Image 1: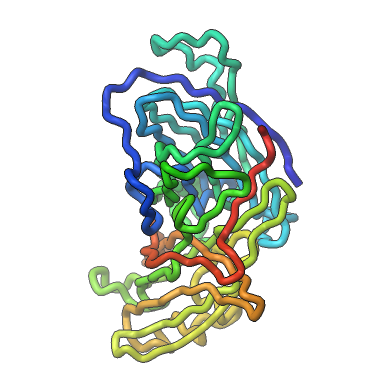
Image 2: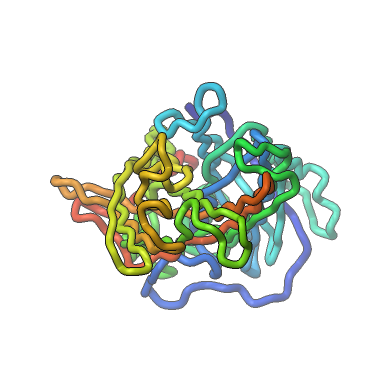
Length: 362
């Protein structure tokens, strides 16, 4: 269920850079480096020995408003359960060219932020809610002051996940830090979006037709660090979501895995709201050595996996986006590196495009 609603009005310094945007009405693949109208942080963690810093930036020369949603996949006992989820939404206002940040576990109170030479009269104090126990995604959508979606393409962001406590069983070493760029869906400046938002390649970028995952085989020795072993943690979230009715997206995806000799292996899984697992658990929950993602099965150090959504008989399906985290272990020490996944093509299922329905605020 929805657990709360907050407002955050963030006032900052005046900027002088030229606003970034998308010209014309041709949309391409999702982006991790350009201002967008929808940005998604697929992997956000707080608690269980982790915390996350969210950086959000307005690339434009005017004030930008955004509706943001935390989607928490932690169920009973703090365990990730894709079928039990809740969201908490809040609003952010960013002055021109303003960057801001907050720590997910602590949130941030911006009541005292009116000290940068800005006129703060008429703006209520704001709060990004603290999320001390959280694992899931964060999505922000550019909107008008009254909450209507617009295709301004002024949002970009970075998520930095830090390990707070040592835990060898959970493959954590205190102080380790990894970061990735938010995934952006650009809007067509000539379009007038409605609610739900259509990820159809005409109003907003469509989700990728396929995702390319280049990875080390789980258990393979690292070629540049003798004795160190590789693992890969994959995070995927559905592109379609209904925040108004609290209905999570559900997508089945197929994996075609090629080793260095171009031998092909396959696997599949279903994404319910949120998926975050070491890749061998996709097809082998109890024995990693039997997985098609393991060195024991692949027989090579590295591999390439192509991830594609499965279209059902009735034409329904949905896209996915995500990130990957490489985990290197040696003698009880663990190092992590987050990477954005490469998406290719535009996916519009026969039964209709992915949709994001916002909570009604207008």
